[in-house]
Length: 77
Image (cartoon, rainbow, N blue to C red):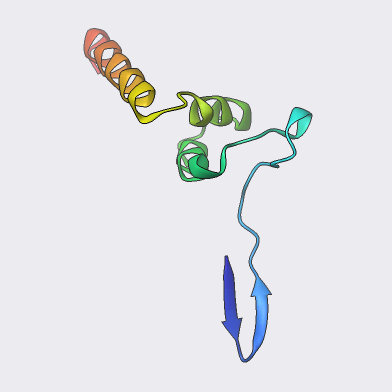
């Protein structure tokens, strides 16, 4: 995120896991909003990254969502 202030460009650091991979963690660029939402909900960095990266396509993520809804319904949430 960049902001222009009186002709000076300031770079504002956002909370992201490293894109270097390995022990530094990795979240796909298009899934950072999901990662941040999970972190706000109190998930650990590892769990949030695993969930955010799961499902390579929209169809796969939709299937996971339906499965989660069934689980919540079964548990009475």
